[in-house]
Length: 417
Picture 1 (cartoon, helix red, strand yellow):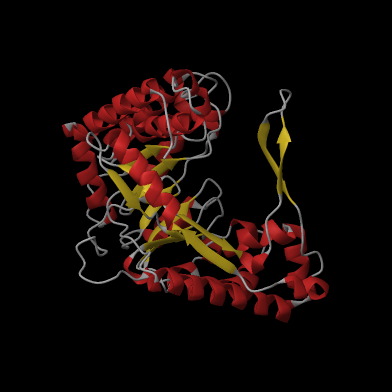
Picture 2 (tube, rainbow, N blue to C red):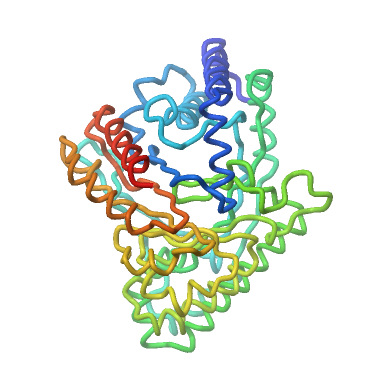
């Protein structure tokens, strides 16, 4: 058990009480109801979330007072749990639990990923990063592709849960939870073979590449079987992270009252393939999509996409995924095409506005922002819409700029929806 000072213990108890107080506020409870309606395709308006974790380093550190590094990490997470509600009043809700996830790993082809970061003038890691390529020539290096390894460390999670319950469990319940099941095959590939090598392999060794992709899908399904057989599948219905700045509130999937062990078909999953944006739709359909479709069929609900535009591969690929509930409409996506494709459909139009309005410059271009959001809101009429502002890595240390940003988007939703 982590031994922390009385000061740190009291600090964490204060923050637990602060989170519970926020969670119980009527306005927060109402937003939770709106999220359930939204994800169940009965929403009243677009939900909006400003994802804060990417620029939290400009807000949270001055608030930290814990002395021990472990306690400071918990303290930091507390602020991530409720600061959106206190500072921005977007639609991110505060949960009445402190959530602990269990460690799990999936090491593709048993090849460790070696990653290095760029450094700033102070020697600190920056966003710039490099992945060391292990697979350079697919045919020559194919013997390096061993059997994928995977596993979990439930003991660590349960120990963490017990420690936190001892500190503040009488104030705020500590919940063991599982977020949406992620599977991002092409991202895992470029982490071990680089995007350039992946593209060359498609051209030089098409049949070997297909074999590799099929192995990825089979290994992933075997990992899913492992989770099921060890009863490690937990519900994704009450605020678990779905990824892409959204959550798994819904009444569609089974909850914790289900009188049987859950399967992967009972939970929400996420997939994307940003790395293949340079492929033609024909090549995506032939080389990439069979793997993705096979994996996606093991989910109860599916959210698809990140920054990649989905419109080029929509008709022949993504639209055929029967369990699709949300699809990412990124800044690089053709909104005109996708709004038409999704109008009247039971698929949520998950819009990601350009991060430039908030993340670039010191002054907020309010009129430019309004026009940008108005276009999306107008095009998405008749769709089930959600808006998440992602990829903002600085607000120039100006909280008021972010607060005004949220106000403007909320005003436009109210005026146009």
